[in-house]
Length: 278
Figure: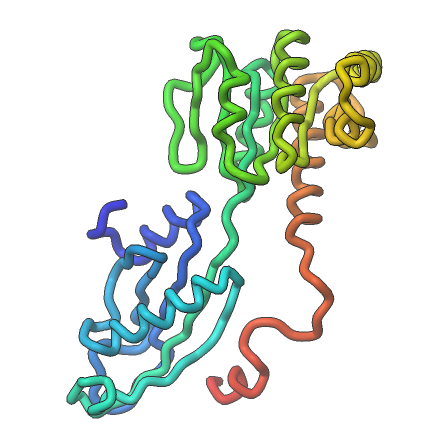
């Protein structure tokens, strides 16, 4: 990523790419300090954008940000820094810095097939917290190029894409070819870490696929990983847009179920710290 980006541009791009990061904000200052309150910078495991003023203060702030980032958990906390001899700075002032850790990566979802349903579905999916890949063998059915959150792959053998999917990826199969659908399902089932395999089709298609998979030796537990018909059962309609909305709804459900936090009474800054900052 370009190093001359401002913190807000880097933050936007990193969040779309699902890269864990820490947003640092100068909350308050007293006396002489390198930068004023509301100054921000962004730090990842290997890069940083913008500046808190340089010097040992920034070095220690980046060190602390990366220590928090390595924990792999969301975090909000405030740390005070005295700009004296212990930091090797002669400003003589003091500053409080807010550390906001955005640790989660975007869920990876690969959509196979670029037919009518997929073309109505993708604009909805692109508005969600997903890292999307769109695969088809038909060049003229896919967009010419993707962006930070959408990768376009034109493959003669779409099944080849599954081997390269990140751990925990989801798969959505919407192709025009039932045999290709079956090949994709079996290839995805060989990846135990893929726990969502959505397959478009009717109840009849679902029943036949389950029978074929059983005949190929797949267990009931494996076959149960295939969601067919994909989408929300209580959303009616067979128009491409209606099917797309049903599928999007199911994916939203899964995203929220995946991110559901354990019950707790507080989060973020502790109340005493927050009260003292106001």
